[in-house]
Image (tube, rainbow, N blue to C red; front, side, top):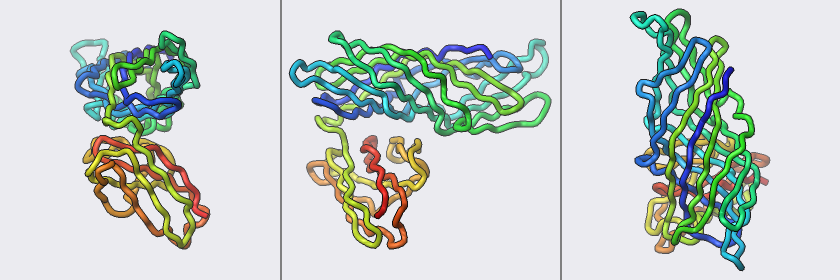
Length: 316
């Protein structure tokens, strides 16, 4: 199949921090306009309409030299980039214009993660690296003019090939600006119809919680039949706070009520909702089931538009 471009420039901002820091960049949906198209084994793809906006977040680990104030290294470590609206509709037009379209395509609830190799940053803030685009959820429905409808999970498709990218990272007041120019293709094959879909546009992302430290979750040792402590720090002050866990591992789950993507799959709420204190701190003391020894568990704390790191633990 012909490879078509996924061309985008991502402008991302996060609170200024020293040394090695994980930054979460939240997409500003209203400023992130994209277009898409592509080819299939049936013919060209035409979006109806052919535009959408990007939403979600991306995590980047950045290292700063405290003596010079310059960034020196970085790595894109995870993300959950989704489309808005959540359903994209496209058609494969019939070459005979007065006949019905050859197929309708519906891309629903698509979420992609972007990861990269570790990269170095020069004194001017430039970097280059290799990225991989991975579909973590969503589906493609193909309704052909002749034949059976198929629905294919996007997560069943292979990640993109490692693709070279370039960009910049630099300070802008109290924020860090991170730009990324991508040229990637997302593909799927349902056994009947194969397709390359290109997406191009500009994403603008920002995060400034007013804190110089990222929201962090620390978990005490987990021992079956005992109580464990979960400390959420550097969140928003006096805000409803939630703790979630997963037995399925990492993923991307949209929590609409909190306007945030969880970075774990099939999450379940752990313990009650608690209000953070005036310093943005919340602590849960929760019992660990006596029969849970050996279980692997992933935890993440969230508030509205705020999330922590994922803490991966094994119950002893």
